[in-house]
Length: 249
Ligand SMILES: C[S@@+](CC[C@H](N)C(=O)[O-])C[C@H]1O[C@@H](n2cnc3c(N)ncnc32)[C@H](O)[C@@H]1O
Image (cartoon, rainbow, N blue to C red; front, side, top):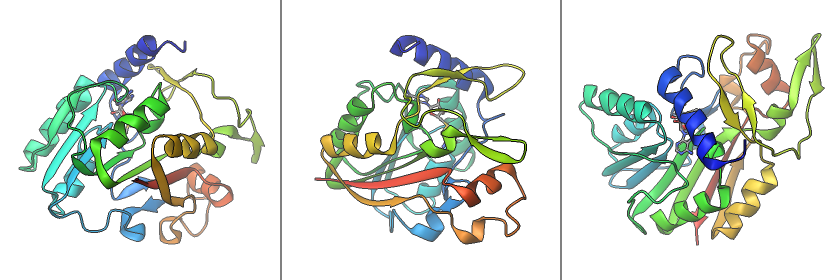
């Protein structure tokens, strides 16, 4: 199960066939359901900047930066179909990005010391090699370049709801690869849940300093009654998303 090749095979088959039908796209300005770039301004002004998105999915986050006058946009994704969707989406908006179909863990011809920003919205956690991926990200960035990513909060991954109560369902420290089934009908993904300290310490080892971490919700995005959706109910009690902003030393 923890073999990189079989994980990529399973996960690219899912994204190639199911795309965002079941797992809805999470795209900028949203970092997750209740955290937004509009509120936190982690990127600031991207005009004239070169940006790379890791796991670019359908291309909508690239579109967000294109409309804010980024000078160059690049995206990579494991799934050839996601790359095709991104290409078509951007083309339909009259926009362009250099898109590469590749696992983020592998050398894929991206230029080194080139980008002002590397970012990822709900894709980094799919890597089979966090340390290698962060080292690659560092190599793509210019000195003082910024890496921003969001991912599912590991506490959110540990908690289930049973009989109107939240219950702790698995160890926070369990980082083994396991199958997940987002769709009751068909489609399997393979995922490992890592602790927050794993993300932070791995960033440090790859040559980054952390500038900001966000776990809290933007109050204006959370429905006031808290019961409007299962996710909102969870988000009132514990973080469902985290965002990290780090700078390459
Ligand atoms: C949840 S989506 C995130 C992308 C976009 N923000 C969205 O919500 O659609 C995850 C994306 O990561 C890609 N992905 C999964 N594993 C990957 C890997 N090892 N390397 C590069 N991309 C990967 C998938 O193909 C998918 O497009």
